[in-house]
Length: 495
Ligand code: NAD
Image (tube, rainbow, N blue to C red):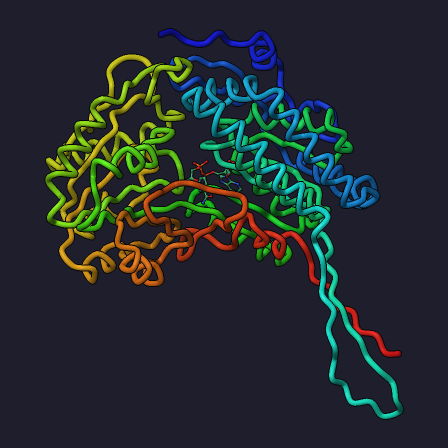
């Protein structure tokens, strides 16, 4: 097979001199500094973006504030839902274009960019669109003593917090950006997005599509740049909420900065060192295809994906043999080739980070299968299974955010739980078994925001998502996001 043809529209979009997208216009940056975007499969520069200064960020925040006070405030909840649905229509119409932009800048397999990134972006936008008309307060009956026959009633109303700063990582730039857009717009907020410096094109394009969808100027703005651009956003006193998705160290720094800035609300969706527990009764032939797909999708660069397999001692050898066999058959190749099953890591710094962990494993003789960096062009490494030396091994403790998985035997449920929970992270976990009774006993004892049974890494907008411990603060999706994007106002009336 060969690479799919790059669309003319994608070539033209990549060749543009991109600036920021503010108030429905392409705005040049104050600084002439440009950040090059590199195709991780070819190591060639494919586009460039600008670096947002304080002045650029102020323009974007002012535009979002103006739209919050006027254009978006004058739009009814029903209209907001319609416009988000229209944006979802346009995402579907432009799915191939958006998918190619993602693949050419992040190395995501083209089929994953199409069927997961672009398609799910539309699904999530539609889900949030449905909430616009359903954000309600409550009525209460106060028990205040009545001296002269007066009565009391009370209610709450939910009001949008205002301008939201959405800071987005590179691994699912479009979809995670759309989660933040959907949450903000459906509650009546406006947004300034700061995409990752490695993957900004698809969100710049989405912001243009939003104008086509009838979303007023200033409701969605995009300012590109690195961490310093994000910091300017958080420091703005007009920003009333920061929604951040990214790594734990950055998340902690952002959380502190938001508190110091103006007690700004912050939600943090951070990293994980997620565990999959394969119990004694699991049928490995049945579960392995789903487990391995959940683990190695997008080369393991998925916050929810497992990096630690805990396998009952009786199944350890069988799992290693069968999983190693399956992994070796994954066809590694160009992400633009539809027949490839495994692509490159998304960018050079991340490639260097994963290489460091692979070298560590090689030095200590811990590799079960894989473990090598591929010679030649592109940031390719092999999908890898490892042994660990114990719970203090850095390979057991640290998030690699790559296709690097520890396989660890256990004998008892107590030992399993102790090792699973031996982590500062607590994002996701899974249990693979037909013994539902045992699964239901284990679930409450697992320290993770999401636990799956016989599945892993699946997100759905109807199910809340977020981490415990150092994996985050707050929840996305379902009705759980509403608290984060609205102020609850209490009203009491005497009559
Ligand atoms: P990162 O923390 O390096 O960067 C994320 C974003 O923050 C980027 O846009 C970056 O420019 C910006 N940023 C960096 N420093 C900043 C600062 N001081 N102030 C403001 N903004 C700043 O993360 P990454 O490498 O882009 O993404 C990978 C990480 O994201 C992994 O740890 C992964 O687990 C996590 N992640 C979590 C989820 C989730 O939902 N929990 C989803 C995807 C990725």
